[in-house]
Image 1: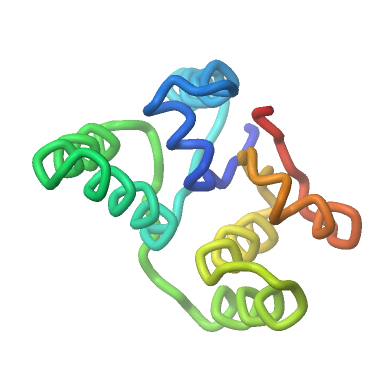
Image 2 (image 1 turned 90 degrees about the horizontal axis):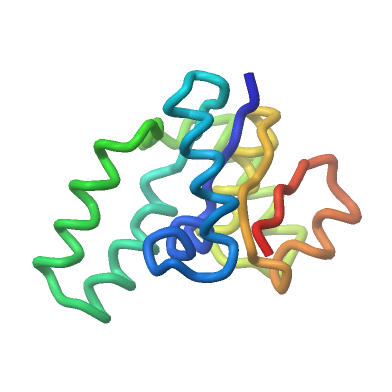
Length: 137
């Protein structure tokens, strides 16, 4: 079974039908068919929620969130010691956002592919870390 960690930009691409949305939809379809597992940390989901809230208001943001919760995605909430230290290592080593340190740490710990479009943040990291990236564009 393929394992994926979902980055906020990948989910936004799907929700807004941006370039790369088909790639994300394929991963969701695989999860629905039982051939893939998708995880997203609640802190990364927060990025999607607040952007929807800012752009479309509370009702649409809440609607998006409720719809997402019905998808075949494990929404993790905890920051255990391993995630805490691995995210801290990423944040201390690279110039990245807090949310990016969380998604990287999750992908590293779960040995999962990071589903993302965020070349600006992750290209240098891909060259120096063992994380596998699945670029949607």
